[in-house]
Image (cartoon, rainbow, N blue to C red; front, side, top):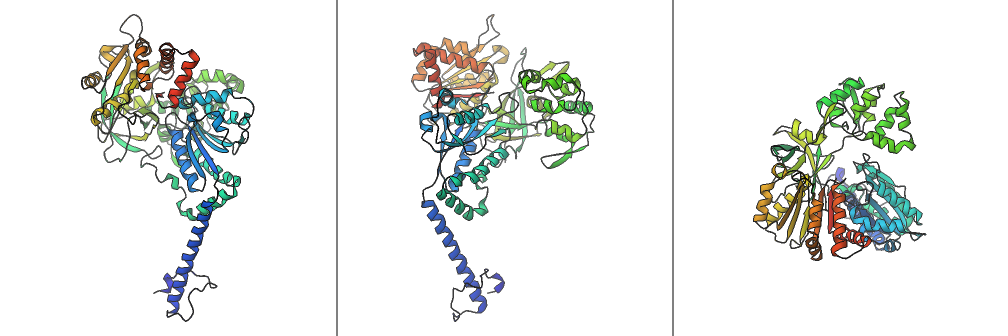
Length: 602
């Protein structure tokens, strides 16, 4: 046995007697082996003793609309348990303020939905939080990670509201709130790293357990990431385009396409209700316009997130050009002498700035306010990072193996003398040929799933491209032979040219996968009719379905349709349930908190 293979043994440690029947090399190896074994046993005993000591109880709360906050909360819970905390995961919408007041340490991950609103499932809690007075949360310690999108004026508004209201009601911050925009990886890492430094001080026993966990799992740093899917937002799959079918017919003033992408050999899984994240590329003519107006050379080297590339490539795949953000305008104003633009970016002009941003892109800014951009690096630093676009998946893997389908309305319009288009929709319609690949990943949405019991009635409301997840639902149910009552409300402009997937839905009715379909074609008569009108007409039956435990799903436009549908449902509950308007609203919040009123709106 070679002495070179012997474990290192301090000279003071001698476990075997000197007259043991072994050579010096064998004795050295065995002494090292037994010393290491005893050290490991001691460390495990220390960890076991720490785990048996009272552990700090930490509740990890989430408020999630599309599943991002919930997914992060699950990761945080798993890592907290591994570090020795008594951690539980809770949906914020399932709590009352009274229950929250009984807790000692909470970590909140909250998304903002719509125009600064709470996610649907947390709306009831948000009302209680707003109405509370005094200091009912005295004794509570908390930290908040707020998720949002800077392209909206009320960025991270709900998470900020939680942070401010908790403090106003007597709670104490464990750490400063962190706001996350788009890519949540770095803010989430910063949030949890801060907590792992802060929380152990709250309990000596938990501190010991945390230290023991660090000692035993030092080689497993980042273990909370080991269950990450193979393909993610930052590591997308190159999916070949298989088909691009026009769904709208002759005479339609819309262009809606059915997109089929290949998942062959991707090992990429999704469920009906999930969305597909798509990384599009900017239109070459838009990139050319930015280059020309800025005066920067296309091949100028720039660095983004530690990666060096040419300016044209950076503008094409790394930067937002079709949408203009407040941050970009504020930065840009420093390089112009225009007093109007400089006045617009003052804090008191936030409303005027938001109005200014609507419908404009970076080309408008460069044209209207010519300024000197010192170099290419500054140009890319001015612009917001490119964000993936999310599309509700309109297929089921059970019915379409190794494929994912999308239903995309192609955005084209003219504004301020220029032809423009939606970034991702025009990417598919104009710039991706069949066989070419698009970078994609699955964005899981566990809050928009079919009921676990297929016998539960479902009502689906999806005008326009909001029909996408319901096509997936029905194909999934057909493939699995599920029974149960299903009801679809669909709306568009003209029945003749805009009835998306008409033959498929007629076959679902014929095959009894779809029990009932109500349509609203707004331009086929003098008075416009929308899905909310059809709902009100069928209010008595909708109320009856709700009494039978039905789940209501809504998908589509958040600005108008979702609000109109919400108002119609509230009116139905008030009329047929004989509730006051306030009672009907509370009942809707209860439906959302119980997972029976689910919305995927954008």
